[in-house]
Amino acid sequence: MKIKTQSRSSALSNKIKTKTATIGVIGLGYVGLPFAVEIVQSGFHVIGFDKNQDKIRQIQEGDSYIADLPKENLQRIIKSSRFEATNDFSKLSQVDVIVICVPTPTAVDGTPNMSFIKEATHDIGRNIKTNALIILESTTYPGTTEEFVQPILQKNGFVIGHDLFLAYSPERIDPGNSKFSVSNTPKVVGGITAACLEVSKVFYETVIHTSIYTVSSPRVAEMEKLLENTFRQINIALVNELSQICYKMDIDVWEVIQAASTKPYGFMPFTPGPGVGGHCIPVDPKYLLWAGQQHGISATLIEAADKVNDSMPSFVVNRLENYLSRQNKELSKATIVIIGVTYKPNINDPRESPALRVIQQLLDSQCELKIIDPFIQTFSVQQSLLNTVPLTGEIVQHADAVLILTNHSEIDYSLIDQQASLIFDTRNTNFVFENKNYHKL
Ligand code: SAJ
Image 1 (tube, helix red, strand yellow):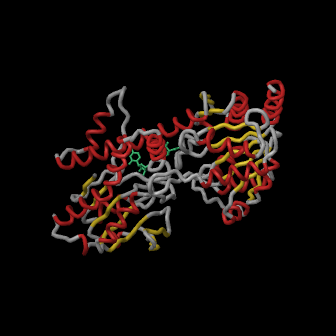
Image 2 (spheres, helix red, strand yellow):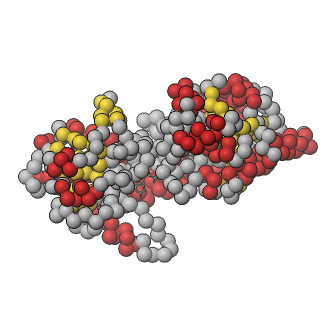
Image 3 (spheres, protein in one colour):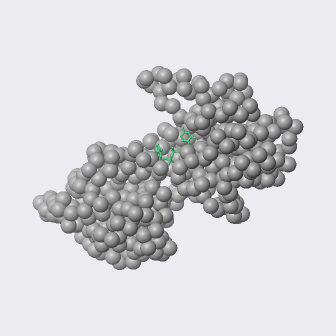
């Protein structure tokens, strides 16, 4: 068996090294589609799979729905005829390597929703050929690859590590980050067997030319991703809680963080804000919390951090109300200009954005809102569809306050500084405000 396995995995490695392997990517979202483009650009034929026919159509029309993927790049790889997007999963029979980049949401009670990984794995099990490599990249609870994915593939008659290879490698896509991309961010990989690890290492070295860090098992790789993002969630909660204490003690929390950052070792700065959004930081720690609970350990630190981060939208609204009352204005009768809907600056993604929770609370308080976000035209807040409007001097002049929730670079902050009667900046925006009624978190 060992010799045959060796020849099978080296045959696959050779197909990868000679770029004659066909690569499949399941899930063409903010992780899968840019990765598929990267793989085509490194010389492979790629088939992108997604259940969403609209996405397939948009891709075929060269219309990129991913802010980090310029449509010119997408159109170029489509013209190269080395990329096809399809929702015909029977074409999985044509691929030698398949990367799974499907969503891994959590239910309201924090339970992992494995339906997307389950469906993708069943599609693969029904169609994939022998000697193929499957790599799960979706963030998930430790044990998923070995205890959830592997058994489904084995039920289709495969012997993992012998006639099918399986590994886990966490995606490290940072939306909006122009410095770090797939091709220059180190990749962590854990294989079910040594042969699985070897062939997945060859894949990443060939495709993204970045340093590959191998670990002893998929669950180590699954767990390290959760550490990466739970580390962020807890440290963001720390500075959020610090901002609440500093506010009460009339201490500038930003000055405190800047001073602490002078320590050249043992400290890493995070910034307070209106809360924590996106599809990673609010979600990934819940997998760690859930995994701990399954093993009788209640990860109280993660729960406490969630509570602090979740308290920030109300903290922001209460402070805004406080600033308005100093001008004898009532929040319920106020017109507020909101700057920024997305969960972080210079991207077009509003998912889980704390701005949505602030906006909801202000709407509940009967405020009139003028919402500015150059990256978003319409968005929904609890069943109601809202529109953004362009920033104008008139809108700012007639408002009782400007609330900066997401500090996109292209916003005209000087206009706000000159015309606003009150500014509450929850992001310590990189602009020197001279407005006499300027407050920051
Ligand atoms: N946030 C703060 N204070 C901070 C940092 C972030 O309030 O100091 C808020 C942001 O405004 C946002 C949320 O937290 O609402 C998440 O921000 P993020 O910078 O963590 O951005 P994400 O969610 O896009 O996280 C991704 C992650 N990438 C992957 O999971 C592959 C994360 O691991 C990256 O470290 C992060 O990008 C990054 O560094 O930008």
